[in-house]
Length: 446
Image (cartoon, rainbow, N blue to C red; front, side):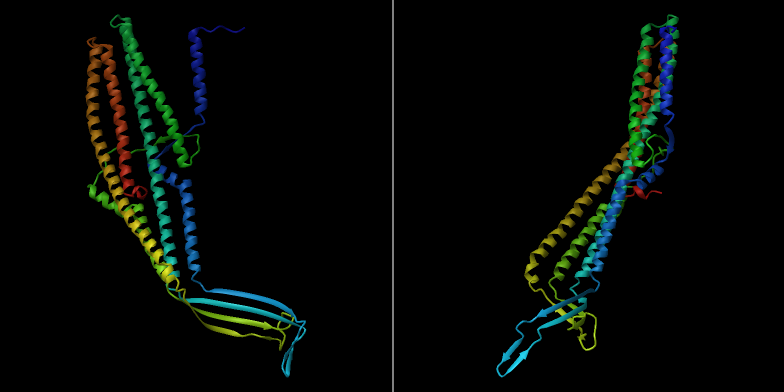
């Protein structure tokens, strides 16, 4: 026979059941503390984007090797057999006549080798161009590494924000619980009304709602970061350490100079300019004649048997020089040179645009970092003020000289100030790493 549970017992039973489910669901989650540098290394090692970029480098290297191969000697070998039937085999030449056999066989084998001695520099320019493109592809990988590293840093600090905020929520809930307990005692003593107790309970509910939002955000950020790092999806990441202190910062010009020297986008544009200049030289080289050395071996056999038989074959050897000139390129390539010059000028203009963008990015990152440091200092002052205000209101409420609303408001102000300070510290850390990314130094950290 089933026992009938009282409402309080039913509520307790549900709470225990839910707690068991929660413990069971989190038992499989493995906590893992992780440092920022460890996260960056894991993300770079497991990045699918970088693996794709590496394949593009391999492709560019393959094209470079093909360009080198085109400068090697060329060789050809052929062998042909033919049989001729000659039904009309007599040729009368007046008093004399020539009679040919009714049929004839011929075996012809040719082996030839050609080495270009001078081709106007075309092969050299082809190698230079493809070598420059290999360097551009390698810099593409560096650009991707910087962006991937920054994405990891951004997710890491987002997780730090949430975890720090959750800690403050838990501390605040403990403080509110103490206030609820105190207000209930005051209510039992007839010192305050029921509304005072409800006011603190409402405050606790609002903080709990904020905690629910934070936990939801933590799960989303944690999952996204696990995907970036290539870790099992059941892992629950915790922040091992974060340098919250103010970093030493140099003058703005030093960061701009570093960015112009280090940023891969600027270096890429310089290489693309060199590629365009090499292309101009290559088109000009096509107007010049080509000189090549040739060597050949011929095998001529008049028997049906392709194998050499004494007296039936000859093997002439040839060696010589071949000079060729497609002089039509003198007028056919004129507009191609003009186009190549325009492309070269575009790369120069693009470099100027990229340089300006880099300067703007560095300046913006620099100013944002300075602003974040100033914001932390102001919030630290507000924390001190909110702490003192909370202490005063707590004392007044204990002495029945302040209302529950004043007490709750003071605690809410302190709670919000604490949250804002942790967010500001995270923003400052992220702003610092954004400045490093703007200068092209993010992945060069030890």
